[in-house]
Image 1 (cartoon, protein in one colour):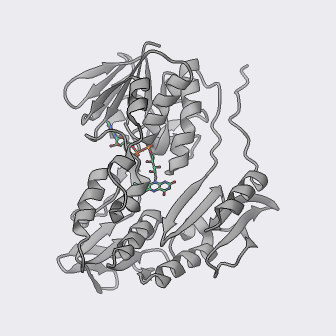
Image 2: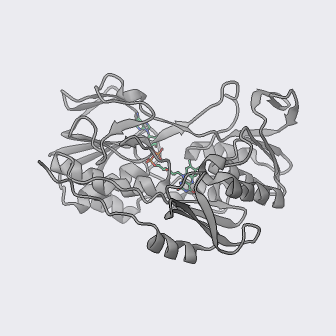
Image 3: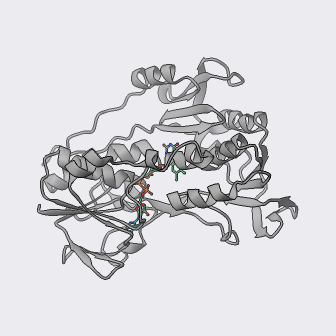
Amino acid sequence: MKRVAIVGASLAGVRAAQELRAQGYDGGIVLIGDEPHLPYDRPPLSKAFLAGTASRESLELLDAGDLASLALDFRLGVRATALEPAARRVLLSDGTSVHADGVVIATGGRARRLPGFERAFVLRTLDDALALRAALVPGVRVVIVGAGFIGAEVASTCRSLGLDVVVLEALPAPLAPVLGPELAAVCARLHAEHGTELRCGVPVTGLEAAGVRLADGSLVAADVVVTGVGMAPATEWLAGSGLTVGNGVHTDAGLVTSLPQVVAVGDVARYAGQRHEHWTNASEQAPVAVANLLAGHTARTYTPSGYVWSDQYSGTLQLAGHPHPEDTLSYVDGAPSSSSFVATFSRDGVTVGVFAWNNAKLFNRLRRQALHRPESQPVVQG
Ligand SMILES: Cc1cc2nc3c(=O)[nH]c(=O)nc-3n(C[C@H](O)[C@H](O)[C@H](O)COP(=O)(O)OP(=O)(O)OC[C@H]3O[C@@H](n4cnc5c(N)ncnc54)[C@H](O)[C@@H]3O)c2cc1C
């Protein structure tokens, strides 16, 4: 393989480039990204960077040493517009193309926009964060639509800036489909304890000059409106490529698409029917995808750790495994009403998840001991 094109210059793309070199690949690597910036880390965008306590430089995913040793051919500020597998080409928005023997799809996703909320702020990119940060001036009243991880983090950052915050959530409780009702109640309590007004169970219907209109007809006054309602995988450029897309790029259990020379990683990869939108997943997939790309077939499968963290109101929530909301929750340390606790999720007597609020030490121990996580499996041929 003489040249690999990585499309998407963020976490998953960078990790793929690092893995290519770590696994001995010494050919060309072209890293294509439609944002004008060098690769940066997204989690601080809703936390310290939004609060103004982390610098732009601290977000960089690659330092000068990495840039020198990886020898990447960057194409930044240009969008991949098509993949032509037969010609082994990626077409770019500036009219040029990149010939590549192997392609890593790492295009992540874009913030979903609610119809009628086109003027609202979203938070996915550095430019989104800069625009939102500029709007968070003293005295503004912020309304956040969506109480998922990003909505909750933006709310807590806004409270740390002393702003009035209302969070609107269509579900009966925040994050209930992920954490189940008991832990959802903990998340709701956190908002209340820190002065954020949380209104659940009423969908929004539109954005007006004075604020956000709810389905019950009421208006929630707002100076700044942020929608945090998830992301949509960036797959539009793959139309006509022959690859199967639909809620992400479909791959096998080894992150290999229907073409052996094309793999997908990170938020955009829908492997064996699953897709995750978390930092650790995007980082952990690269070694497996790259090994399979270099092998020319699916030699290994990917096993996710299901690790997620979220920083809210000076605390840290951690989750590992793949629990369902209906799994049995048991408190191992502390109580849900306390400032720190650890719980496990079990199904049919087997621990399937670990949750912690402000207790990383016990969380890490339980995660290692109680959660069975098979290593990436070699695929036995024949
Ligand atoms: C504000 C925020 C806070 C977060 N906090 C946490 C956290 O606390 N914990 C956690 O576990 N996870 C967190 N995440 C999630 C984590 O950041 C993502 O899972 C991770 O960024 C995924 O990386 P990725 O490289 O797959 O995709 P992305 O980071 O989305 O990167 C994809 C890149 O590809 C580019 N691209 C898209 N289409 C094209 C194209 N056609 N041509 C060229 N380039 C293209 C995009 O512009 C983007 O730069 C957070 C995410 C956000 C937005």
